Length: 78
Image 1: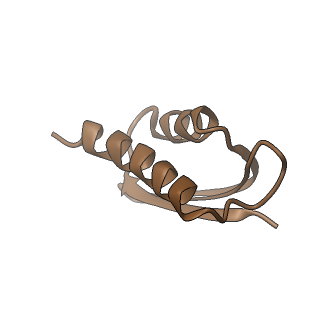
Image 2: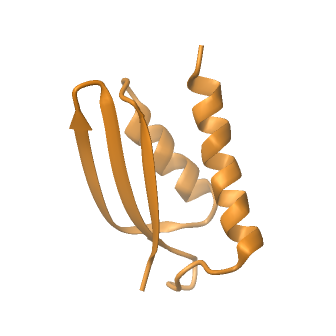
């Protein structure tokens, strides 16, 4: 079982790298991903696991992952 993370954003050069890097830095491994672009919109779904290969279920850990991704998103907004 994996934790599912869906990211929707305006597409830009380097977006996929920045998202996957943020997931890696938080100690997650990507077991599978679906990456799609619809015009200017990027919709990426990641199936991730923690360092032990388990689904992330702890609310504080999930909040930390979300916070990291939101910081990434806010930094890219003009």
